[in-house]
Image (cartoon, rainbow, N blue to C red; front, side, top):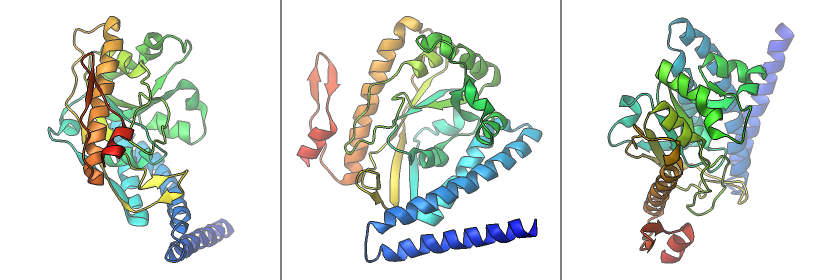
Length: 302
């Protein structure tokens, strides 16, 4: 046991020294900051995950299971701010995150840094969704189970309604909100844009008859870009939009709900990013009543 502790001490001391070395090197070679903050992020995530396992057990014992992911996320937020100088600032004009429950929260998905975004804005009594097969994954599956993650049985991946049926039941019975990325994957977009939306989140909200709450994160490619080898300190705004009710809607309304929600989020994404960059927002083009604009238009307008 003593030898194990000694080994861990050497490991963490060496790891910390490596982070400091690359931060110092970045004063001469700016790109070294990418390595320094990447190393710092990995150790912060590891520490937060370990904390998450213990806090999940503790909160489960006192009946606060569904806030465990919130607690673990906040620990990651503070560690990242301390070790990398990066954080997300949440704009929530109507205090929706603290007052609306349950709901289906959705947001744009840019890069791996969105894990930090969730840590900064994740509300209490909310969880991510995950494939049922992840339950059996050591550590990760244990944390998800202990923290009240909603598992989705993807027996029939071609039918979003069947996939989300069990999750909708849990949302109603436990009054637990969920957060999903309707794009389904990271976009790595340099300019503000959205990938096509998958319909699962909208089927889920309609089946559970709970509101959709769009959360829009400004494009932060100037902060973090794998392709550009950029990882800089800074703040990124997140805007929580007004809830979109789904009461009375049916599966027949899913396509229209997804379309209008995506257009609303794209418009806010461009405005939020333009504000962060100090750029002029281009005039939106209207085609058949729909707003058409892109990050390329915004770049030209600047």
